Image (cartoon, rainbow, N blue to C red; front, side):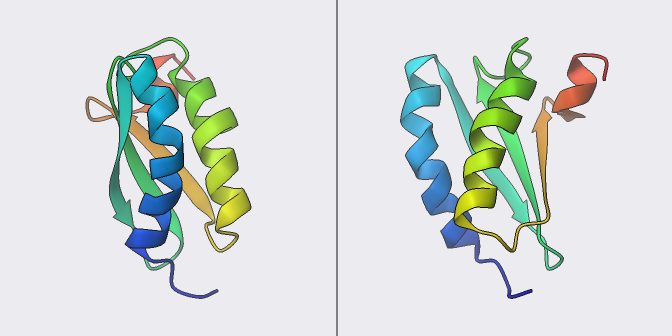
Length: 89
């Protein structure tokens, strides 16, 4: 596995941002670890939204895995909690 650059992940997120911002939300890149884990924070209207898990998995995560195959996991957070935990998963 090659090192994943913060900038490469940011470029992919920049493609997604307009759709999130249209609904009053956004995504911030927190960390790209050496072992291929990307940590994101959902903010604005995305924070605590019932659709946050779907937005993360079907939108953001899917595109990141497609564009940067060395990513092994995407962890989403909102208000300090894992996104799935916000919905009781």
